[in-house]
Amino acid sequence: MRFSTIILAAGEGRRIGIPKAILNVNGKNLADIQYEFFSSFNIYEIKIVIGAEAERVGRLLEHNESLVVNERYKDGQFSSLIKGINSLNSCEGVLIIPVDVYPLEREVVQRLLSEFELNFDAIIPVFGKRRGHPVILSYEFAGRLTDYDVINSRLDHILKGAYVKTVAVNSPSVLYNINEASDLEERL
Image (cartoon, rainbow, N blue to C red):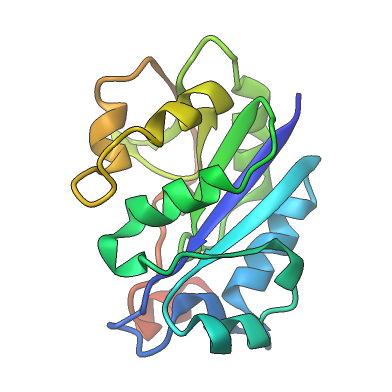
């Protein structure tokens, strides 16, 4: 099957002080780390959606060919998701990952990819009783999301009414995200 990945990295990173796309983790920008991680799987195409400080962020990232700029990033993360979906070529599945879900375990992503089935709208990892990331959407379902109101929609709310397959995983990494410097320090 052919998979694409959308790395959602358009936010301002207000709590951490810089856009998370360019957050330095062991000498590399977080968006580049995510790009390289997902490219280590057999991913057809990867898009990094940036927005806040787009010119600066674009200069600092290594993978400029995959950048998609969301000028309306202040409309929320769903607007970045739609911008990313609209930039994709046809595939079967679309992995959606916020840039700050870090670090992920390779085995978890491999398991999600292997569990993907076209008859579901989405595949979602679950640790304990909590849903996490990355979410894999069918390309057909992702295309339907472009009909939603960008400002007032949230993927997690839309998925409540979708045909979803949950996959229990043994790693809390699907729940991690970096909001403050201390979050990153705890995981390194």
